[in-house]
Image (cartoon, rainbow, N blue to C red):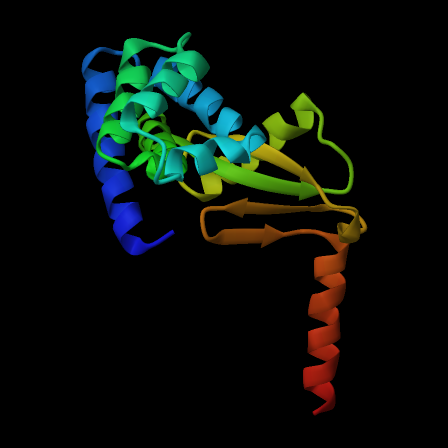
Length: 183
């Protein structure tokens, strides 16, 4: 996504966040935006439809009402506004930006935790407790990614920080140390 898209998406996300904050519905809007993102992720042809130059704005609006009719007026009107302004393609980035704003307000950081097997809720809670403190947050919103290549242990990615406690990571570090000691 181009830098321009990111800037525009951030502007829309901030406006939506301010509106949600004013009406005390930040979490509700975040949940609804997660549904929108899931719909777009599961139906890539939907974004192609919105991008198609021969599809009229009215046709796009009908699809928005059909696909997202159960959502709040706030989210639906945001989608309609994006369709009016021919900016529906920024929706995924807008959702990511909104989620960051909501997380910052709630003291939450988004984290990807890579593990060999799916983590239990208890394991995720323990990881959240330990790593949230390291990044100055109250808790983590964890997305667990199963990666058998890790061999064992976990790897945690929070923003641009990576905490690698995996067996494969440790083996790679040992390999680098041995190679550098040899030279």
